[in-house]
Image (cartoon, rainbow, N blue to C red):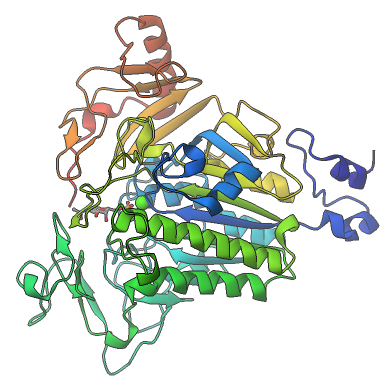
Length: 517
Ligand code: NG6
Ligand code: CA
């Protein structure tokens, strides 16, 4: 069978469709063009936040189009229950617990990914792709002593991205500026930017001392520099003209993502489009304010859904939809009060952001890491629901397989056939991480080793999975993790501990209590 007819028949197993050794005339055929690849990455969107994943109180029609027109995974995981480690795993194919620095980073942290490390964009560049990142970065910049008034390096541009338009860390952390290809946008040399996570700059107001200057009130943390009335984490001085507008951020990133697509439509391109919603501070554009009836958290989910729709329209208008593989997922599970009084708790009503899952962001329970996870490719992937066990750490090897690269990374499985809807099993084992602690998912089982420390982070009101005893749950029968089978099924527990220790070693006694700073 020729390469072309194989392609026309669809995918078989995890076969390469873009075989570099194929005869020239077949490769030249438009139908064997390498697909554009887009990863849409949400920030703190929960398993139950989409109507396609069971939400009844919120409607997310545009995200649902991806879920219902592609593969909707029910066992799709972020590697971690917080942002930085998940993003590290997604881009590098390496479990974040292998890197001691892969924790929630301050805005001044050095670049976490080594410039010599393999990454998804680097691998794709090797296959002829143009690569871009738009949105939230949160993987560190520079070497630890960034001068925000000079060109910043290393940045995404040194780990595989040809183009970057990012915020350095999170919307609640300084510096509150956009950075394009290593340069702060709209920087005024006469108003230099200074940033510190240790101490305030003399004379600068803070959320703690000047509550009268804030329009959003802090609940825990978030009481340092005030930008646009919102108190943030970290201190910043100067850079007035460069400061972003929070309510316009989503529109701004959308516009950058759309222009990236338009200017790279000859392809192939890879775009990592990292949204900031529904992470705090939740600042919907006025046209979405009050639309969900659930307060700002619901409103920014509707805003993000609209953005997904507009972005998809651009792909369609440019004639790219049939040749673009789109992955949609989230970096960790949901949280309501993550440090500001913003009505997220008060107005939640009957909505369940985690669906039937236990826990939330920061948690080793399922809601920490099991997230909305869809793969959409118009005309190539049959709409379906898949229970295959898949993780974002698998993107590197799987996309390598898709595009004909032999690059891999230590923990990245080639799950291409699962991502194409052919294999319904996926991985057998997966190590999940939450604030420095780890657990093993194996087939339908999850084992959480004993951890000291509080069972709940009180400030966010989330059970994080700590218990002084082993926990063992059968997720196919007990998705809500109510029934700990560790005592009643000692054989399974022993098998799980052995499998866990084989990957992880005996490390748990060293894990300290979880403190959110
Ligand atoms: C925590 C912040 C939280 C959020 C989180 C990072 C406090 C008290 N809490 O430390 O608000 O910013 O870090 O979220 O400061 S993440 O999704 O980027 O991992
Ligand atoms: Ca996050």
